[in-house]
Length: 261
Picture (cartoon, rainbow, N blue to C red):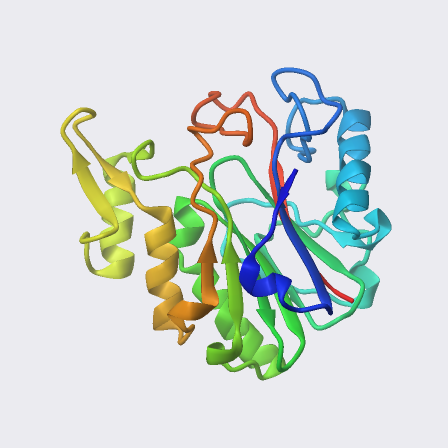
């Protein structure tokens, strides 16, 4: 089972998806369609899961490009020679990178998550795509905004033309954070309003990842009508999504991908 964004599905020259944990071969605690070599799952299972996903998403596995994510704010421009990187092992992945952009056809950009936000980008005018992974560090580092700026700089994309699909993540209801995150949010955004809410039950602030994405993307010139969110909470839907917070890091990874065809 895959999720698709309505705003991106209107275009026949791209393919995209957000995966779930359904239909894979991995066993507990990675049960289902685990895509992550960073887990302790059997690598053969992960490769088989990726083959299953590649077929369902109509993105040939050998065409994937997968970064080794580190919660960085690093963006790499992907070229034809990068096709296949990170597909069969994390050692061959583009290292220390959490976002990819390209104007090359037939290269599927893939990012992974287990609570963080995966997002995919498409500029139908310049024919440019992007994929981004951002947890709280990438979000306060404004990596999503930096992807837009990099698409502008590298390919001449106009922000008002870019459509963005923003995947499922941990909801503010479940995402309690410490003072380090509170301080980082205030320093980055200058405000707490709408981004952090005090929870009387947990006696902690809770962080709104989707709202923080929205604010910085609007600030970058993205039109609100061009943003689309998958609202399901990864923590609260164990049958659909892996969640590092819920499963205390003993869990798999789902992914988001996009490809120009």
